[in-house]
Image (tube, rainbow, N blue to C red; front, side):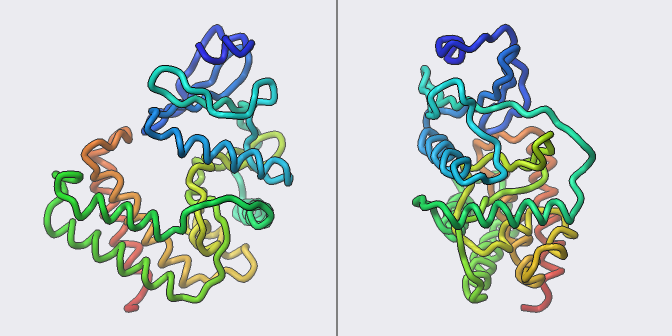
Length: 266
């Protein structure tokens, strides 16, 4: 195994997360291995580069394991990166603390320079999946039209809102924020893109935006609807690997409609 060849002691591996990528806790070396198909090599390399740069400026992010070279390791048909494993600690993150760690993360993201897509590029990719029947054959025509119109309409509305844009996390939902003995840390940095900070805040519990200075509440609502539309589009891909996919296909559409209702007539 890659970790053993790099001098880490591995007697056991426990699956922490299994979707498009697999996360494994390796023991007793206490390493988190993130394993992706080789087709996602570019995403893994981007994530490692962003993590290295953010760690250098003291960002609240999970760090690569310091005992091995900070890079993506290719083995057979997989891209493997090795990270520090953090034990969960403390109570649930409060909205105020969530907003505070967002402020620190966004400040750090403004200090690094990386080539990253704009959030509209992610929308374009999702539209490609929705509009191509061969990519999403189970999606009904009415739901296909609904998702296509929602993605394109909200993308244009958010782009036209004249909000400042910067490098953002991209998907900082509660599952990508670890509560550790060092405080809250963001993980899964492969989703970083350029957009308004409200695009990040829309992934967090609703109360978080109320504690983030200067956040545009209406823009958060639009971004939340867009995020659910993106989530739904990925679930309808023919080759999506998310567990309980059938449930989340229906739930994603329902939550997109509910979020749109909160955006008002515009």
